[in-house]
Every structure is written in C-alpha cells, then in structure tokens.
Length: 259
DNA sequence: ATGGCAGGGGAGCCCTGA
Image (cartoon, rainbow, N blue to C red; front, side, top):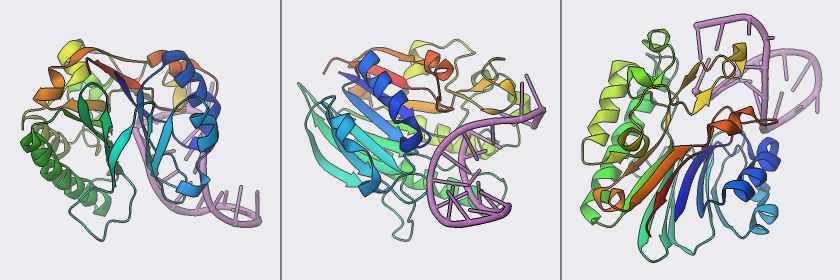
C-alpha cells in the first residue's frame, strides 16, 4: 500500500498537476494539505474518476485537508481534538482497510510566523494537542501514521541554509523541541530512518529561484507508530514534481507499506 | 532568508504562507 502526503497549495490551481501525479505515481492513499477550498467547492468528480474516494475537511480561503483513497475508508474524524474553539481545518483522520487496517492522520501544522507572537503561540499549542493525540495512537497499538506539512525543519541538515532559519518559527529551538517530544514518544520518521543523508527537501519557495538553486527545506514528514514502521518497505520524496508546470511549492512524500 | 512569488477573495489590493 502506497501512502503519500502532498501540500498542494490550492486545489483549484493544482487540479491538473494533482491528476497527473496521481496517474503517474499511483498512490493508494493521498493525504492532502492546503486545499484552500470549502468542502462543497472541492472538485471531487475528476478525482473519483481515477478511482479514489474523497474525504475533505475544508474551510474558506486557507488551510483545509483531505484524504483520497482507492481502498475503503472508515471512521473519518475531522479536526484535532483538544480545543473546541479552534476553527482552523488542519486535521483529518480515517482508517483504511486493506489486508491490515491502518489509522491515517493527515495534518497541516500551523506555520507560526512571526515568532514570537500569537501565531507562534498557536503553533506550539497545536503541537501540544498533536502530542496528546499521538499518545492515544501509540496506546491503541494498531498501525498508525501521522503525515503532512509539519512546518518543522527537524535538523540543520534538513535545510540548504540552516543559519538563515535560526529564528524562524519552522526552526526555532522551541519548535524543534516540541517536534522531538512527539517523535521520541516512539515514532519513526520515514525519510530520516531510510534516507539519513542531508540535502533532501520537500519545499522550495517560489521566490528568488529557490528550486533552481536547490535552496530547499524538508518540512513534510511521515511519522509512524512501531506497528506501522514494521510494515514499511520503501519511502521517498517526489522532488521532480517541483519542476513541473504550475507546481505547488511542496512536493509529495510517500511510504510503501506491506499492508 | 529572498532575485523577479503564488493563491484566494473579490474587484483594488490585502492577507497569508514558508
């Protein structure tokens, strides 16, 4: 089973690129972020025509996440628990039923800039709620993964110019500490585990020729519980999609599981 | 972080993102 995460930066602008990627790489599951659409506005028909069911958790203008699946989904839950007042659409989960049932969590973690400030406080608070949900997933002892745009550069080797990001919300020490507190509960980060070399990126800014200069950062991650990590046979980053026509500023990251 | 950005909303330009 191939499971991918992809921040598409707007479904309306990205539909042709998304359809090309689905057709060419054939993921069984795609966890999408930044759909920037309400549920009713999501162009589900053309995606369904490729054999996917579509579950969205959208909002107007910004944010929004979705799950595309070629296998049956059950128990879809929208929204990260822990704050009834949080109206931002950044979390969706479901169980995919193949040979093995796997709990899938798609997330769009807040950017947090400028830091410090209220947006940064929201990011750190959101990560606290993510940690609470992560503890539950581990306790359930069923294979589970949390994949998406974490807006976290875990280590200096995950940025072409780490020094330039030192005070940024994506790389500040408090952000990385919060990341490690989740990771070290017992998760395996797929790319780090299998491709530990520096210089692998999942995002390049649209500005200043960042992609041409390979001035990237790695901020899209797949975290797996032990029961899920045991199923992984491969993972990679579809970096070449950043060079396509009208690309997202992110590229897909995927894992292959025996499931 | 920037060399010259992109998307959405909505109708002139501001907000947001990374």
